[in-house]
Image (tube, rainbow over all chains, first blue to last red; front, top):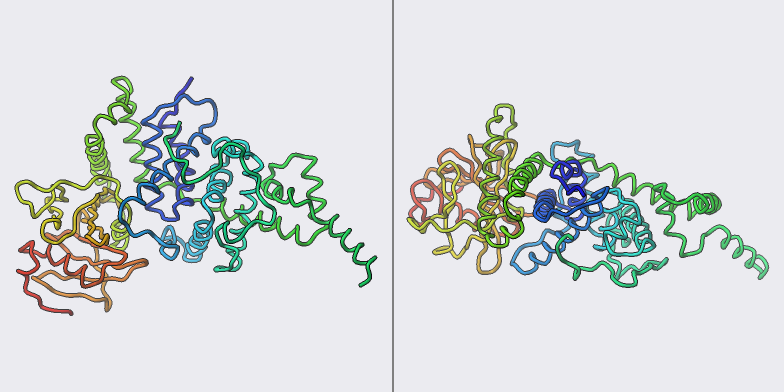
Length: 193
Length: 289
């Protein structure tokens, strides 16, 4: 069975970087996260069948939470939402501002929502694949994608609106299906398998 | 409104809106992943209901925005992957990388640094067509997170760390200034090598100190705060999320940036690096310009 080759990883590097950017909200952090994910994936060669994006999503998620856990143990000054800047200062100012707004809106999402948005809309996983990668039911993924997009759209309509609030303070009217055995949380950290 | 009209209105509403548990399916309708029977039914419902149409539009709008993000991976990330890939491939025939890494984490870090420097050197060859990086771009690196462990103290001179750019070493403020080195990173900025060391003081305040290889960068001017000490010109620039101070050492641009450190603190740290002496006390101050 073929193993994940660096060339294959390189084919997905743009998507991996964009996914990291949406998780971190900061280009430098995103580069660090994507690079660390690559290092982990290459350091633990694993036989893969078919599309590796689900595996990459798991590796990215685990690396992201691992970095969060490490960062919480060392003194540092965390970046706030106001610190998020346009990605490329050489880009058209209006486009750069749009991107910055979008990143702010996504950064304000609860982690679970941000993860599914990255898995489905950035990495292009199917809902079933995203469910397997994130350890959640397909119905849960569907609900989270719906809520995540809804919050992003509303936040961009009215920046600062109360719609952009963590789930705990803005419960979803539609409710959310939950995985029977495990749901995504910051406690679920580990190495890509 | 009588009871009959209320009932009729409620009936129309229940026909127009899908059951609550199906509302999330609008996400799949928006991205085309919904199966045929449910798609047709949900589309019909959306046509009948204004609120539902609006929710569908929200889904489509957010999806289009996220998919419009087309930033490619930075060249430095791609180069790092090539280096990493070549290294892991070369070691595949020897012994498992994982086991080796577990036994020698320091060697891994050193190898990472060496690889990053090799990439930087390779990219520097093509510097002729490279653009000049900006001081602000260097400051962003100084505000980023560490990728490498802190360099050790130079045993021959504890005032300095054993990490340098073009022979210009990073200071060791741990002994006298209370700022200990906690990490480092190596980047290639538009073809130039930039090494950064991160320091933290006892209160957890953090600064990043970057030295840029190659000719000096244009220093921001135009009325920004600047000071002369010991023949060096220090310029302080407010940036998003903090401030930077920049000056030159032996013709190379140095930048210290922090999210919270005061301008006076940055100046104090930078003055310790002014030409002629590592200690700020020895420097004649000529004051603000």
